[in-house]
Length: 154
Image (tube, rainbow, N blue to C red):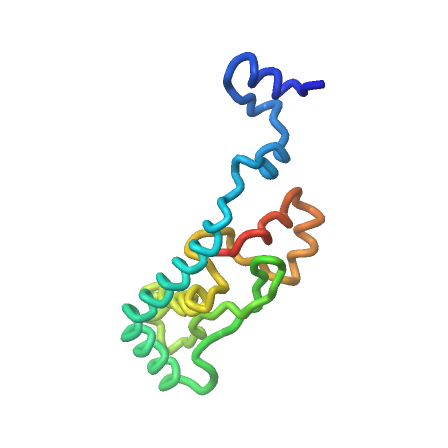
């Protein structure tokens, strides 16, 4: 027995967005990536992360030096986030220091995330990395939330 959306699609040649179940899109074989696409994408992301780090190294060094000079403590803040497969990793960002406002003004506080890209924990594109304390709650409340753990966050 064929469902209404399948019948509509076969007769009209179009997809009914009203009748279509989300499962049909999420678990569709047409959206699967080829066998080598995921490792190639991961290698591409790591290489791009390394290249960007080399390019912005002077800015990273200047920001780190300014933070160290202005206050004691670490240069980076580490926030625990959840990546592909539910594996936790530290997400890097510059520590906020009141005396070093230029980092926030030019929106450079998230620049150290390229370290995460170069380490292979983040991809160039993907869902935002979730916080582990909210992941269980959101998985219960939002349908298909767990599917985001099947890809690398970006």
